[in-house]
Amino acid sequence: MVGMPEPLDRKARQREHDAKRGSARERGYNTRWEKARKTYLMRNPLCVMCQKEGRVTAATVVDHIIPHKGDTRLFWDTENNWQALCKPHHDRDKQREERGRFQAIGEDGWPL
Ligand SMILES: [Zn+2]
Image (cartoon, rainbow, N blue to C red):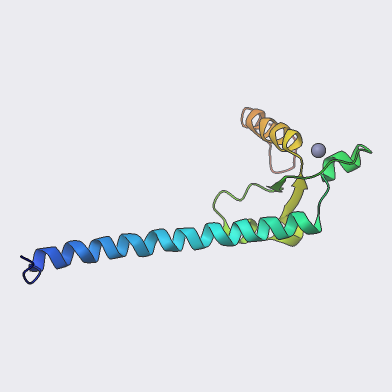
């Protein structure tokens, strides 16, 4: 037998509904990034670092030149802050960043 939903049940459903809306928003965000990333790689199909080294390698990763750290302005700055990289270059770049954490850089750009 299905009766009228209890008030508590309605609240639970509302919570479930909110959770679903939240994940949908998240999906939308990921879809937007996924689309933008693909478009960017279509327009910039070659790894910029390999090009600098005189090699032609297909780029598979979109890298943020300045780590965005959750900053949406930096995150979506396709003109200035995105670069197309191959996987090895992207990973090498990340390793450099890891190492960079141990070497603080002063405001004048020189290591402290
Ligand atoms: Zn490369």
